[in-house]
Length: 128
Image (cartoon, rainbow, N blue to C red; front, side, top):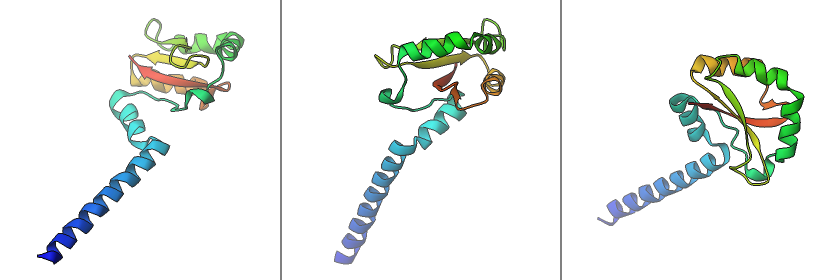
C-alpha cells in the first residue's frame, strides 16, 4: 500500500514539475500562443513587452518616410488591408498594426515588407 502511494506521489510530483517547466518555456518563447495566433487566428504578433517598443514619434517618423511601401501594402486588397499606428496598447510606446482579410493578403504583405520589422518598427499582422 505504501509503495502505491509513493508511486502516485512521485508521478504527481513529476507531473507538477513538467507543468511548471512547460509554463516557464511558454512564458519565454510563446510557442503555444504563436501556434494559436498563426494556425487558428491567422495572425502574427511580435510579443515584445511595451518597454521594448519605440516611441510613437519614432513610429510616425518611419511611417512618414516609407509612405510608398505602406501604399503598396494597402493596395494588396484595397479597402480590406490597412495600416495603423497603435499607440494605445502601450502608453508612451507604439508599433504598427497591419490588418487584412485573408491568408493570401498576409502572405503578400509579408513579401512586401520582407523583414521581421518595418524599417526597425515592430509590427503585428491581424486577420479581420
